[in-house]
Amino acid sequence: MQTARPVPAATVINLRDLGGISLGRDRSVRSGAVLRSGQLSGLDPLLDPAVTALGIRTVVDLRTADERSAAPDRLPPGARLFVADVLGANPGVAPARLRALLADPAAASELLGGGKAEDLFAHTYRQMVLSPGASAAYRAFVETAADERARPVLFHCTAGKDRTGWATAVLLMVMGASRDVVRAEFLAVNPVVRAAFHPYVQTFLDAGGDPEIAAAIIEVRPRYLDVALDAMDERWGGLDGYVRDGLRIPEPALERLRSQLVVATDSEPLVAGVREG
Image 1 (cartoon, rainbow, N blue to C red):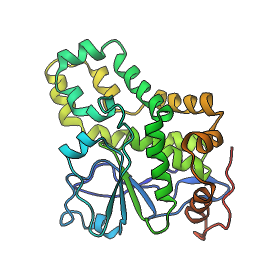
Image 2: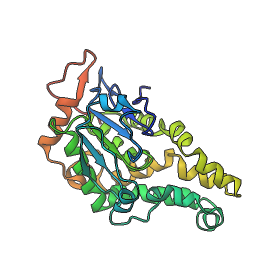
Image 3: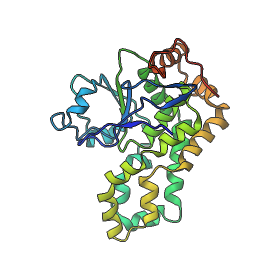
């Protein structure tokens, strides 16, 4: 199943172009328009000319204020920064503290052992769907992706897996992707994220840390996406209700997104993108 195309980059982790992801009926996402990644604090345009060549106009930072302060983005040349803080109302939650959670194996065992690490992340995914602050952030992100003047858009959090993972899921579903396609893209980041965080995980394990705790923190898991989708279905009756009443995205923005980013196999824009259920 087609997932996002990795973009080789030495100083940005988990950089992926959503272009080419299947939207069904010989349709796919336009290439080079919307990309995802981990944080950009280490971006070096001299070492990564391929990133500069992407022509990014807007970087959407989904991180908390503390994360942005500790590791400010280095923007690609010519790009502007747009902050859409998903976890602002609760900045201490798990995805914002990946390295801190791995820094103290004894504390991690006490706080996160016995399956509690996975439960904590699953709870965070539910809040990313139900929290008004998170909804406002995701609405701003989708509206930015729908703005032709803002594209190409690169959106990211810290590792590019949790907040960015749900942002990707929402964007793909709005454009008509099936949940199977969404799930494939959601899980496809695991090998890169494991590699990026291997030094921290190894130090954690060498100090006696629980491998299951480390895995639950570093990986994305099917349960995480399922929790988010279930919250969407339970609260709003599915995608349409979530987009209309949860995210409150104006219909013109949705129409622009589908007409400009959904392409046929010949890469010509579709006049109207009709979503699948």
